[in-house]
Image 1 (cartoon, one colour):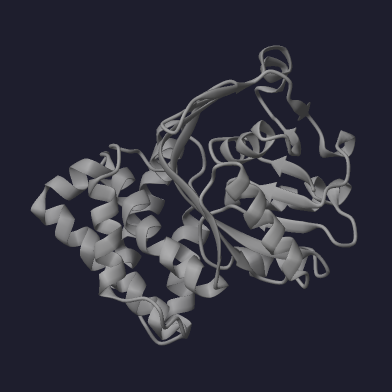
Image 2 (image 1 turned 90 degrees about the vertical axis):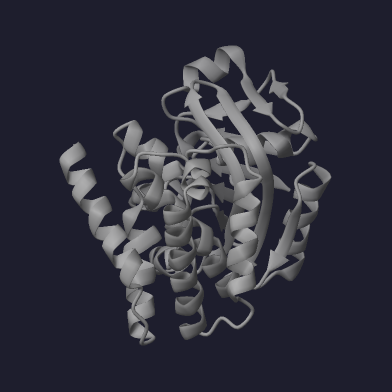
Length: 303
């Protein structure tokens, strides 16, 4: 299959490069570092083994890219309005678009933009950053779950999962809604708390007060998910996420990096939308509502 990557940052760059390393045809859309990658290639510094792509199918515009069987979208969700222009040149009748993005409600909104396009969620559990041109820094973890949102071709989902596995990426198909909310169990506490308290994941868990607050926020997400109809999620999952993070390399999540580099934060899909969905289902995420308000204050003061 031919892959396209829109948003060749820490996430799209890593997964696209892993596929390309094993011989898959992958076409990458770059923004600021296009010229650098054209000349120097793409470097992935990885805890699982670093590698360099000498020749990269790099583009500055999707209009110059070929149509693809699968498009991996690694854009930050604050830029999803750009998809109306970026996606069409890559699409054919049966293209699968995998949205490797954080938050709740993303697929629903993108489907409204493209009613006939097949969509899946990409839930990436990875510590990765891209803070300089042409270099992805993969620190730990790296697996990806694929949740089918509207793809009618099960064999295509199966092939994507298989391609990732052959590329050395632990990949699995999961139930869509459950997967989105399970990802939020980690995302909602850690992304916002590292911004609000100007810290990293390890420091939050070393202090008993913030550890308890993280757990309380995780349980709000668990209970919100249950209110929205997710059954396979409970306190044990929250405890697992905390334990995984304790053993994780000290990490600044994507929202913390966005804040530090004065980029827009993904507050809507990470906080506003799940809070709204929970309210519709009759549940209030009170501590996370407060965190959302703090993030909006900080972002306005940080401009």
